[in-house]
Length: 185
Image (cartoon, rainbow, N blue to C red):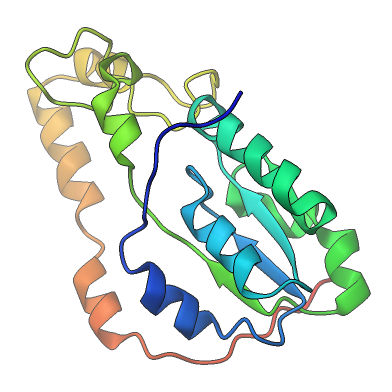
């Protein structure tokens, strides 16, 4: 199945420049989506191996197939949560003893928002359940509509209030670019 949707990730040029891919051997794209970053990473260095992850197989599948056909054994995809990177590609990483770059593009893409049955959209014409899970086939987490319908007014207030305790903007403001070495055990 050939993908027809074209997507250019936000800040693609800046992210690729900061990844410094020229001499990279192993790179990880933790949030494949529809492959915008993955494709550009592979194009930048013909000697690197890329491991990409995404939970949303409904969207990623045709784009994964395209990259597998184009980049053969240099592109490896796992329909998994990136939190399991160390377990999933441990053997491959141990050969090189390090990862050169890791990319995260956190958020939703326009396909997820435009397909109302996916349950990410707040549009009035949304005719699907309020799902809000990246992997709608998983039972690991409940549908957002089930959570909202099962909690009372005060529980909902507490849930949202507790969820906002982390001051994300302070963390970003204080972030400084630094080299990160990953040690695999």
